[in-house]
Length: 117
Image 1 (cartoon, rainbow, N blue to C red):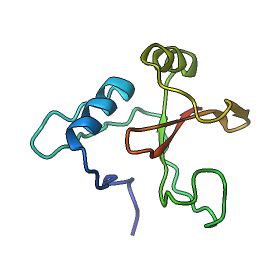
Image 2 (image 1 turned 45 degrees about the vertical axis):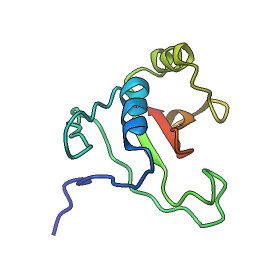
Image 3 (image 1 turned 180 degrees about the vertical axis):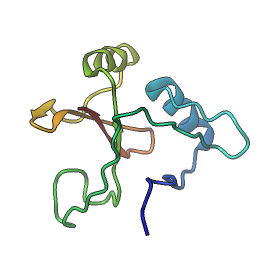
Image 4 (image 1 turned 45 degrees about the horizontal axis):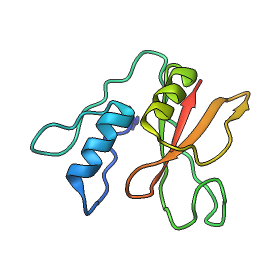
C-alpha cells in the first residue's frame, strides 16, 4: 500500500460562515460551496508533513490536538498581508535549516503554522 497524500482536514466549528470568511480573507482559501470546503491542488515541489508530538510538547497549545501547517510561497509578502489585515503573530519568526516559520490563530483560536521552505 502507498499513501499518495492527505485526503483532507476536517473539524467542527460553531461559526462556519465566520470561519469560511476568515480563511478566505486571511489565507486565500475560498470555500464558497454547499459542502463548506475546498480542494487545494498542490504545486510541484510542495510537501505535506505528517508528524507526531508528545502530548506535553509546547510547540503548539496542549489543549489543541492538531495544528494546521500551510506552506507559503513568500513569507515576507505573507507577513505584509497579515499585518494589513491586523492578524497578530503568536510567536517570533523562527528560521532554521527547515525554513521560515510563523504562527497565527483562526477565529476559533486554532494555531496555524505558516511555513516557507
